[in-house]
Length: 368
Image 1 (tube, rainbow, N blue to C red):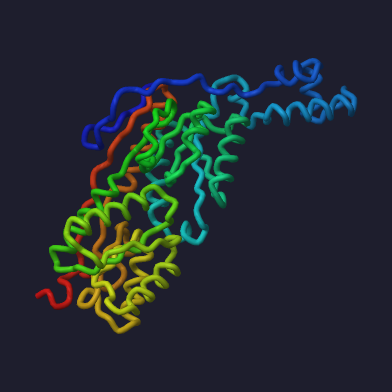
Image 2 (cartoon, rainbow, N blue to C red; image 1 turned 45 degrees about the horizontal axis):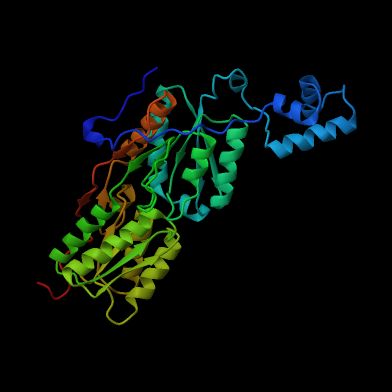
């Protein structure tokens, strides 16, 4: 069944298809039987806890299964080779940041919309770190749990593309892999966001408003998009000759966003403009600014990287970069469905976010 591809308005495809490698083969009961020197029925009895084999044979079969990395299939369809009709999504982020981040809720809404149309299930798991995430992929692959995966939060030194290529597990990277990772990746498509272009548009506008002291309160330093935003800010600062511009990283939580805001505003030569990597930190930062007796935007302008209802619930309303996050999820899910239908990996660029100016930005103090 053919999958819908994103329209031209959703972004052009990249260069031609990457060369495919032969995917790794999952170990089977036949492999275990051959290695252990027993029949396949004996393997089945041993691994399923059924009588009919000695304890010595049961122990030997289990050791061999562990050595081969065999896992029981959790789906009857997988046993017949039809696939699991499920795709996976793993998040390796601090729980504190996930609880307040509107981005992922909207992204998953878009993903689920397409998966429902295709009658595909979504297997979702939150883990503590990248090693745990990679372990989940290996287990899902061995257990036939998923037919493909959606990969979020590309890292600056990311082990996941190589792992998924080696397993032959199709996936879509949401965001963009680091510029240093040129591929090719035989089973991976990418849905890229232009973080550098978005940062440039924010700095251009703040500069036009007279701001010369700008602080970017960023997210997790290990993420590829954080690195691109920081690098873009430096480039724009150099282009405009701005010496008092910098980025400070956080865990995306309102707590750290507030703490960093308090610290930078208490220093001599405090910034006149703050750029936050999500809406929650921006709202927390605006509240701290008011607590310190400063005016938004009279003394400090505030920009949120993500637009949401929260940006219109606080006072003053927050200027924000607005993108179609639900549409972002739809595109990613369509690309994964296309891979599952036998399509070639490709890269899709989503449109540049628009800067929606509201009450939290204005001319820099003394510039009027």
